[in-house]
Amino acid sequence: MTVPDSYWTLKLKSLQERRRQKESGDFDKAMMNALREKINSWEKTVLGPVLSASPEGKEVFENLSGIPLKRLYSPADVNNQEYTRDLGLPGDYPYTRGVYPTMYRGRPWTMRMFSGFGTADQTNRRLKYLLKEGETGLSIAFDMPTLYGYDADSERAEGEVGKCGVSVSSLEDMETIFASIPLDEVSTSMTINAPAAVLTAMYAAVGEEQGVPLDKLRGTVQTDILKEYIAQKEWAFPPDAHLRIIRDLMVFCTNHMPNWHYISISGYHIREAGSSAVQELAFTLADGFSYVELGKKAGLDVDSFVPRFSFFFNCDMDFFEEIAKFRAARRIWATVMKEKYDAKNPRSMLLRFHTQTSGVSLTWQQPLNNIIRTTVEALAAILGGTQSLHTNSYDEAWALPTEEAVTVALRTQQILAEETGVTDVIDPLGGSYYLEWLTNEMELQAYEYFEKIDQIGGVLEAIKQGYIQREIANTSYHKTKDMEAGKRFVVGVNKYEVQEEKSIDYLKVNQALRKKAVTKLQKLKRKRDEDRVTRSLEMLKKAFEDPDANSIYPILEAVKSYATLQEIMDVGRKVFGGWKEPVIA
Image (tube, rainbow, N blue to C red; front, top):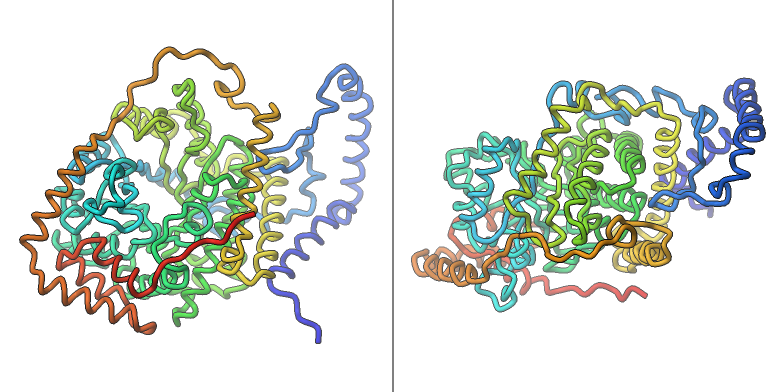
């Protein structure tokens, strides 16, 4: 019996056929033949004499994804492109040119600086400072114990409290973080995954205390556990258990928090782990399609929950590659949602995304050079059509940013928005032969990955077999080898190096603050209603044990009882157990 081709195989064959038609000249043959003759003549009479005296003729040029690049692109490279099918108009299917009809002419992107360090009150002061300086959206970074679901007094938290973000052990800490910050006037993004449901419940509880109903809270929680197994490695339970809790969060937020983006599918950490731009594109969207399947299995209509999805991408130094990646991502998402998942609501087809400039591109050598790197990456994100943007600070290869460094990073966005004219025209590089060809090429390579993942059995199975992790590891290895061999250069690292006598002044988190956080936690435990805490945790245990129950309601009750983050997560650890990833050989 012949097995019918999957959607991914059929789509890939369609794209490959379009490439074949382009190469065979089936489109506009007379015009294309004349153009090719002109290019051949130019190569012989104009280019040839120059190459005979130039080393460029022998050198192979590739972008950071390893895609071979010609020296020149022309209409012959995009002659199979149909404008309405492949590009469309801003705010209209397939959204290649932007998800909103006016883009930045109507409103600039949200300037959402990733912030959080030390104690809750320190982070509260930093957030208020950034809002005063013109930030237009909040973004919270959490420390390592919080990301794993441990309290500040856990022995596992030793030496890590407040170092890479703010320490949150209970609802009391969240109350402090948002003290005097009206949640009905700002949107908040929280970068947290394993305990995402717990932090969402804490945010909802703070909103309730401020008199802001659930349906008025705006913001995003990352929740993308699949990329944790792929790249960042911060999980608490086995994958199936985490996906079940994400299912519960989807249902809860669909019913009660319509303005809350309860999952932000993240390519950022996939890229920081060493992937190429093509891999970031493919693996991120593959994760997104997996969450679509998860919602469908929970009985939700696609158009009822997918509009709350958002995405989070990295932006590295290969300028045109990054812009093409963003454009390809929008087109792929819209196409698949319409064709495979039969979405009817245009908002289900909109790939809206936040961008953070690349952390791994920053260097501790000559750190002021990082201001230039961040500016280039921010400009690529803007020209790629991002909805919000975080610009890294020049000192982040050393530590969390100082107030001075984060101000420079924010001013970088403000200068781009106010002084350069980049907000005046939508998708100003659209129509560039090179950019359109590269967008098409990255789209094709992404579908090749989709087909491979489908043949393995889906993203979860590909993770369990180590396929995706292995692909990233191999790419990272080859990038390192290219650096060592001098095929790739980073200014100040393996080219234009200088002897630096002293380091810059950078932020130092005082480890004495752990003692302060522990003391605060001990006081909380003495004054809370222990009977209520015990009852709420028992309710949560029963919900976790029942695969058909929605665990978010008891999580919310536990949070309001001032059960701590670790107490809540430990219930899951006892019910679900742990997980070890496969060995990547």
